[in-house]
Length: 513
Image (cartoon, rainbow, N blue to C red; front, side):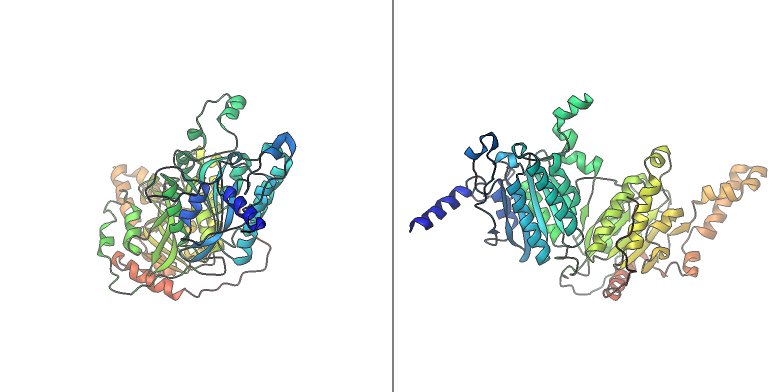
């Protein structure tokens, strides 16, 4: 071995020390993995090609020139997941707490540029204490460079962030811009300022977990789309999520081989209760429609009155937005509207057809909702669906009342196909409320007002609380039996597969953010 080869060999060996090199012994390991172990587990065997392994920081202030680590706290490169090209960076908390320096940022930006050029997904495994304080504005500039590239890549390539340790200060904004954010329970945190700063400024005492842990962001803020019990499960979820997504916005998700058989699903006829006010689990409807065990739910624990997620129908990847009668009767409120709007826009960006399942009694009333902007937030979902050009199909299972009927992918905002079950009720409002308004005088003058109200409720329900008036107008394309829903959807999505829409030329619309 000549001297130059030996020098390179020694440097490469040293470069691997910070992130660890030992293999993962079991897929069920509960320990926190190193940066290199995470990359190794996520990517196909022997597919990873590292970029910038010998990069070091350039700081001489505060005696930093005496602490030099190859790679500068981040592992970057490319590889494959299920033979699909992806670009990846994994921050290494063992090197300066994973803090971001000028060169650390340059390495991340380099793989981001490559991902955009090649039209391949970008995956970030975040484990960082924030900006490297010793570098001052250079580290802040590095963050801004990353943010800018996140925005330039948005809607062009899928961007997935996994928070696998602390993620504080400026470090949180890049994941927030990306398409999906995953967090590991009890070991990952996201916050702008930590518990100590919060206590100093507001005098609040709060733990890291309560302030910015996985459970907090999955249930309260909605920042986390998916949570995992450990690093390994988080990495497996990334693999699963990626299988529903295309490489970029010019492609479609690869179709899984599927043979058409008897697609009748009798179980669907048994889900809707006879009592229109009794709740049921919309997930049972979803499971009865989609390919077996193919539902991948997003934001499961946030705004539970609406369900969003990916599934397969006849081997095709689709996005599902569905009201959930089990929570708040499936009403639309501030959080559910934002949740569904964001998911809708992602699917539209990446050519993923949308299935909308409707059982919505309206928008949630109250001062809390009005003061927190139910008008503008509800308009986000209306805007997102109206803007979407992917195939869009609606199935109304039960209630579709008021403005929420319009918002939930009605024919009037551009839905391609609208189906309704015989149990559907399409009206301005529920029978009781409508009767109290329309027949106010009759009820008031009746000998038995309560009996008269019941009579008028029945009259109104027979006239309006059904799908037939809407079907007569062409607002519903077909009233179908629940058991035939899967068959109808398979045919409709197949028919719409080559849908194209020419939009007016504009820079971009102005969604009510």
